[in-house]
Every structure is written in structure tokens, then in C-alpha cells.
Image (cartoon, rainbow, N blue to C red; front, side, top):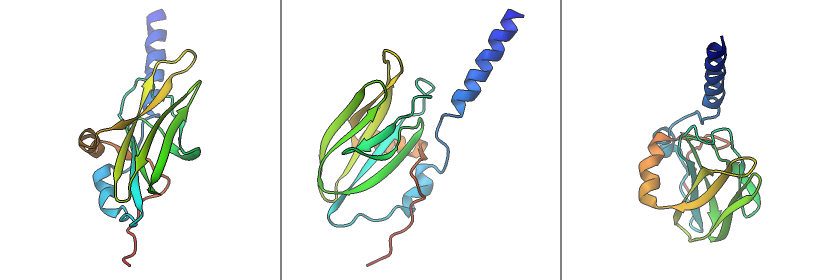
Length: 154
């Protein structure tokens, strides 16, 4: 009976954690509908690998103090910003951040990933190489607030 209870508990945990992963359209499905960059802006992608490790820890992601999205396993989103200096951060029991400069027309990729914390897991933010990010993006689901739409031609 004890073994059945353990098995049922484990199955319930897997079901709960499975609900924590990102769902939605894959990168390839939304890439063609992403708007073009304005001349003075750059694009910042935030991505997180799909993993059960730390799946329940999904803090907000802040860019220069403003919430721009959530770190969800198996998800990505992007924001376009005017060129300048930025700090991306997440916070659970402690804040983790990465600072970088963004030039007009440039694309940066920031990876969020779980790390062990004292009380609760932490989500670390770090710059990712374009090669690694581009290789992983097709396997990730779009988690932005709205579906990208084509920008009107000017």
C-alpha cells in the first residue's frame, strides 16, 4: 500500500510539473509574423530550455526594472528596444541579473536557467551566443503577451 501511495504521489508531481512547461506556437510558426525592427531599435530574445529541473520556478523577467515577461521552461519571447544599456533580471530569494549594451539593428539572446537556492530555486540570466540560441529557438514555444503581427510597411 505504501508503494502505491508513493507511485500515486510521484505521478501527481509529474502531472503538476508538466503543466508548468510553456505551450503555444513554436518559433517557426511565429517567426514570419514578427515585425521588422525600427531603425533605432534592437531585439532582445529571452529563452529557457525545456527541463523538469526547476520547472515550477517561473519568476518575472525585468528589463531595466520593467516586467517584460516570465521565465517559462520551454519558452521564448522577445522585446524590441531603442539602442542603449540594459540590465535583465529575475528574482526569487535573490536577484540574478545580466547587463549588456544593445545597438540599433542588433539582436541579443538572453538565457534564463534554474539554479539551486537556499529556500527556493533561482533563475539565472545570462547572455547566450547567437549560434546556440538560434539552434534552440525552433524547439521552444512563444510565451509573449500577444501573437506577433506583421508591421505595416512604411
